[in-house]
Length: 529
Image (cartoon, rainbow, N blue to C red; front, side):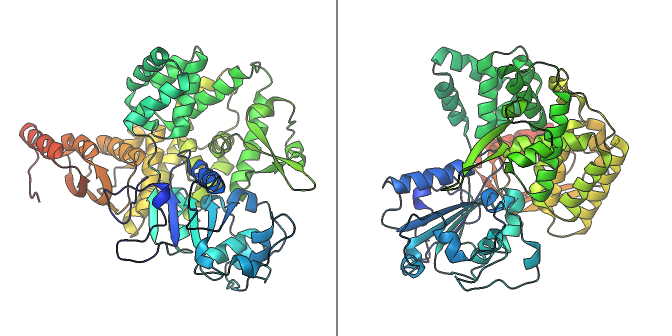
């Protein structure tokens, strides 16, 4: 786990998230960010478990409350912060004043801010500071808490994807930002050993994925690592295609859908309607930020729980006295992929999604958009050809290119749009079409990333884009948490454009590689500090 905002080369463990800072101030508000599948929810569940077992934060917190934003979105009734705090407390319930008598001993964990559906009726309305005043929704109560309008002395830990970080910072002034970094190279090897439980098989599987640099890099995300291991473990005939040919997240996930279907013994017939109905459910869910579905909702989409849907949906139980079953996709990323599959064959839905994601800045749609671009690469759909045939008409490549070029121009004209720029580069990486990438970037002469804390996947897509850009002039990277290994990969491109970089972690290998590149290339060194 890394602290991206305070010290570029500083790492921190969960145990020390709420330690006193170097300047003597207390850490009360913490943002924990991480890409999809990196383990944010698992981390907060582990915090809750360890605290309940007496292993963590025993001297620090008397009370810890955990709220899942996807579950809060299901709450439609009006309720107050006090009611939300006491909702799952068994009788007799304590007085809320007793719980909050020492607010610095109370921790609220809010998991998945990027999934929180903001209440429309509160957009132009000041939220109440009163604990007992009902709000329009549970989400409104959380927004009130995050904005310090309810309680300023309590401790708060919020998890989010990077795409929603800008929005979160409008609600919460954090004392500490931390990022879950995922698996280092040695962690990936250890994961393979534990997954296969056989050193020989683990070593063979690990050497297999090392042959594909893209897949190997993507395995820094635990979810991706699990998908790859699961596929290898099942020894399906298409596993070789995954490891040797996959080059994008979209391709890994479309392959995984095939793995799920084959491992559940699904026949290759009657899946066309299943994919369409799941896609429509996923699409409407992503638009409305719905990830939990009641059985009655599934029936509206002609989905029966007892049949093929169980391959992609999982059942959850909610309620205390009256227990009800709700359903979700096995992972949010799978819902995002199904939403993209639906929009890929529906031009109107696709353009609507693009508009909402980038014009209306609905960051929760970012990964769905990446998948939409990725599906425009024919290789992405090949694993599904036995189960699903695209029908209808999606966005023609010419129109998608036109939209992409306009979006890049918007980034060039607007300050503070580096996140938007980065999302577009991720889309270009997913499409893996060299001509498309060159044409999309032909008017982009400069890219600037300031304090963006670029992850391994971000660095990968920037490098890919610059390798195919034709008339690019300058790349500026300032305090982006770059490892020297990544910057070294940029050096062969120095003859094509100017590189301004500051804040590299590690320098000796970089300087050696720089010297070699200067001798081998036609670039002119202007300054080196």
